[in-house]
Structure formats: C-alpha cells, structure tokens
Image 1: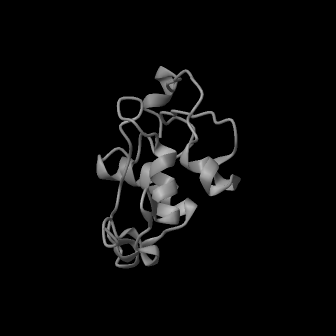
Image 2 (image 1 turned 90 degrees about the vertical axis):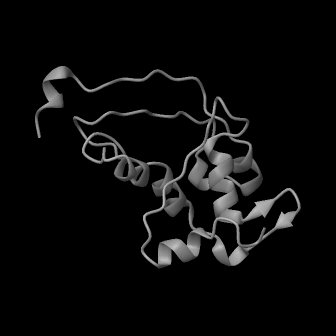
Amino acid sequence: MARLFPARGWLDLGTQVSTGSGFPVGQFGAMRSVWGMTTRQTVIGVRGPEHAITYEESLALHTVNVARLTGEEDLRGTLTPGRFADLTVWDQGPAHCPADVLRDLNPRPHHRRRPPRHAAGAR
C-alpha cells in the first residue's frame, strides 16, 4: 500500500503522469484524488508519505497533463483564450483549505462554455 501510485518518484524521474476521477459517475471527486496524492492519507492511515506531491503538481496531473496525454494540449488543459474551458466552482478554494475539507470537497453544479466558432481555427 505504501508504494501504491508513487507520484513523487515518477515526477522526479520526469515521467508524464496524468490522473483523474470518475466523478460524478464514481464515488469520489477529483479533490479526493488531490487529497490522497498530497497527504498520502488512506482509510488505514498515512501510507508512503515520501511519495506525496504538492497541490500544484496534483492539479497539473488532472489538467495540463491529461490534455498532453490525449494530444489535446492545444485545445484544453489551461485557461487560455480560444481553448475549451470546463470551470469548476467550489464552496472553498481547494488550494488553501484544510486537508480534511479538501478530502470531501465536491464541486457546485456548473455550465460548460465552449470557445466561439471563429476562435477555434485561430492560433
């Protein structure tokens, strides 16, 4: 269990690591994943704390790195004019809330907005 998903080691080796969640289909949202990677906390305690990564690194694994993995880094992954933007609204700022709050943080309902048609081909 302590060596499960050793993100710190993979990132330090320069490995392209991406992650996500099945939320709302799965039981846990993306912040449960972020919480686990940043704290290494499990239902049976902390396991493999040497594999913990920062909040910023974990956020990149869920956004920029996923876009790179799917070959869509020119379309999504960062908030950039002309790119797709799926924004998530939280009751609290995930980057600054306590770990126990981060673990159970779920997004508010939101609407997706796609870039205007004229922006899709412009680069």
